[in-house]
Structures are given as C-alpha cells and as structure tokens.
Length: 348
Image (cartoon, rainbow, N blue to C red; front, side, top):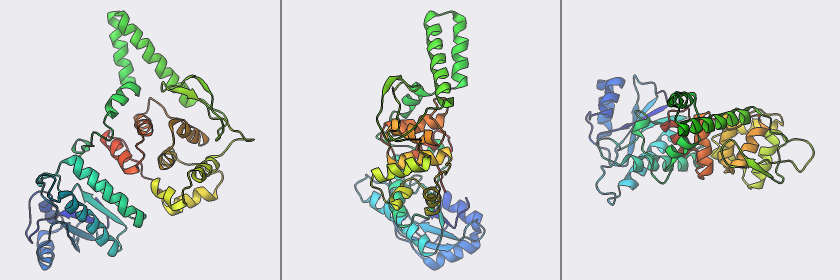
C-alpha cells in the first residue's frame, strides 16, 4: 500500500511484536525502525506515535496500540476510537494527504470484526468532516475478513438472489429444462422474460426528466410499480441542472453535499460551473447516495446522465439494495461493494 502514512498495530513496548507488526519491521528495515521505535519508548493503549517509514512506500509509520477485547464493557470501543482519531490527527499534523489503516484490534486482540469495522467507519466519517481532503484506506486481507453487522445489509444476499440476473444463472436454468419438468420450464420462461425486460429498460431512452408529477404504469424491470418522472417545465434538464435543483430542495450546503458524495471541492466546482457536465455512472450514483434519493428519484437523476440501473449488473443490484433499505452512507455502501468483490466508489 502506497500512502503518506502507514498505520502499524504496534506492541506497547519498544520490541518487535508478532503478526503485522513483525511484517512491517521486516519490510521497513528492522534495525533502523527498531532504533527509532526505542526512542519513543512505551506507547499507551489508544495513543499513537510516528517514525520514519524507511523502505516502505510511505513517509511515516504511525504506531498505535489497540485495546484487547474483554467483555465490551471495559472501555474497549472508546480506546479503539482513540487509536483511529489520534493516528489521523497525527497524520494531519505531519501534513500527510493519505493514510492507510489495518482493522485495528481485530486479530490477536480479539475484537469482534463487526464492532471493529463499525468503529473504524464512524471514526473515518467524523474525521473527514474536519479534513475532507484526507484520503483514508482501510486494508483487510480479503472480503471474507469483513463482517458487516446484521443491522446493516442483513438481507443483502437474499435481495441479490431475488433481483440479480446473470448469464451463468440463465445457462443453469436452460440446462434444467432438459428434464421437461413443467415447473422448471415455467421458471425458466419467467426468468428469461425478466432478463429481457431488464435489458430493454437499460437500453431504452426514458424521456423527459424533472421534479414534477409521477404516473403508475405496471411494474418496471425490478418488479416495482413503474413510475415515470415527467417534467412540469419546458424542455429537459441536464444532469447538472437536475442535481442542483435536488441539492437546493434538500437545503444542503455545497460542502455538506460534496463531502457526503465523496467528491473533492474541485470536482464539485466542475459540476456547478458546467451546465453540460457529463458524470461517470459512479459519480452519478455517489450523488444519489449523498441526496438520499428514493429509487424513482435515483432512476430519474441517472437518466439525465444517460444511465439506468440494470439487474444484469451486480454493482447496480447492490446500489439499488442500499437505496431501498435507506443505507446511504458512502463508507457503508463501499463496504457492501467490497464484500461482493466489486469496485468501490472512489470519486475525485
């Protein structure tokens, strides 16, 4: 990982510990790093200190000592929050623009991964309100190492099973028809119809978009009542025009909006100053999340940019799930995307 600061879950004493601590010493250069670490001395749990990074692709190593999980009632979460906050504040004081964290205390120290993850994301959100230009990366072994709480995305898998259509699934259904089982034939026919409807919806031009009335006409490709947002003004809005109207409607300041969307100040300035701004689909989706739009409003905003949600795209299915379940926090959404092995929303 290349970043200005790399965070090490350090031993509280100036010795080389096990696991990640040992790996970092080996990669940075044991002799040089241990010499600097000994100058610091002991580090209290929840505190953070910095040394040069030596051979690593970083300027600094920030050493923080996480809490050992006891029972959840011994100030473990408060101490863990202190690790993150002190590390980020130290990085900011050293004029770092980027910092990479492991999931602190989730290994040998026994923190439940769900608690460790939610604590990290809460700290990142709070810090980015003060330092919106800091780039924070959470590094974990693989998606299986991430445990999301049952409160958040509890039924994501069942939603995917219901909504997602892919070629592999179609081929499997096709093979099942060899048995001539009437039930399987009917299931295959329904799945094919839904897949075709999804593809048509993705490819079709929807028509004028705007903040006016809605009308119901059957169901859409997602199985929801179909509502077409039509303009109550002449002409058709561009993405920029419709987005700014929505921001005004929600009474958001520019910083409140672009922080929630993961946009830099410079990136949002480009949108605000250009009536014909053409966003990537990822940027349009980030704007949907920042505005906490309903599914129909989200479809309308994407359509102004020439995009649509498709049931044949896993990324789209996860985003629609988040919208339908009111999960709009960008970090939580990125964690769900990561969990499914998908590219996360990283907007600049």
